[in-house]
Image (tube, rainbow, N blue to C red):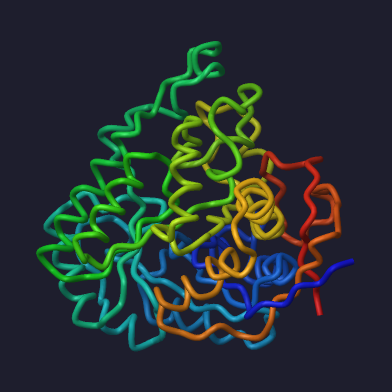
Amino acid sequence: MKILEFPGFWDVHVHFRDPGQPLAETRASGAAAAAAGGFTRVTTMPNTTPAGDSVQWVREQIEDASLPVAIAPSACISKGRLGQEVADLEALAAAGAVAFTDDGAYVSSARVMEEAMRRAAKLKIPVMQHAVVPEIIGSGVMRDCRVARAHGLPVMPPEAETEAVKRDIALVRETGCALHVQHVSCAGTVELVRAAQREGLPVTAEATPHHLLFSCEDIPADDANWKMAPPLGNPEDVAALREAVKDGTFALFATDHAPHVAETKNKGFRTSANGIVGLETAVPITWHVMVEQEGMDPAEWAKRWTEGPSKLLGLPCLGKTRIDVEACRKVDPDRFLSKSRNMPYAGLAFSAWPQMG
């Protein structure tokens, strides 16, 4: 046993499905999974039913003192997450929202996005964008790879992501709003974010454990436990993402923890839901990829779970996170505290695991 202690880890991108889908996850089960994963604070996404566009929704996310982790919620950019009219950002911020996002949906209207960014800039609160253009995605479900060709599955091109990011970076220049690009999947986006930062623009981005660990060439079959949006990139994308984490272009990790009940993930790539759970595996996977494989300094690695989120959302870290870097165990979904099991990690062995308590 070798225990390392860090400031409390913060995942800025989780879906707790509360309200609306209690069989997939609730705030209680999601918070339990987060605590088991080594996190002391999370930022919930507003793609619930109803959508998180109200003061009441924000307060419900924050005010449950019984949870083992703190929730610092994001709230909707647009009313109902429909992308047509900007939500009451001022009231949502006053209620405690730390960011604005329609995550799960791209704000297609440049007019709506510009208005939201101007108002968010005045509030000094970042906009977090799910950067995937629906018109470019079409029916695509994965990147071009062996499995896509073998099963005749429609391909989602990387331009679906990069064109969204290009537009939003242009709006940053116009509005001065801080933009955070969620779950980046391709090398082209890495270069766009890097160039924006060199220009001095307030643009940040996050890397998810699955996009760092796997490429689309690792997908073994038409198995939707490997399906997420954006999809896994190619090996060159993975290399670019890892380099962005190492050189500080990407100052944050985030899980995009997306629980689903089994029947929504067992129909193959064409019709199954997007997303995988990740809170209980994020620490061992990112340690394995960035520290063990890429040689990143452990203290610098930890900053992607602490300093990066804190700087983005303007709150300090809470408590401590303790990790046994010699724990060496396999991913066992039967031990998960999340209500859902949709992910491609079962049976993989990793060395670094959080210690609860």
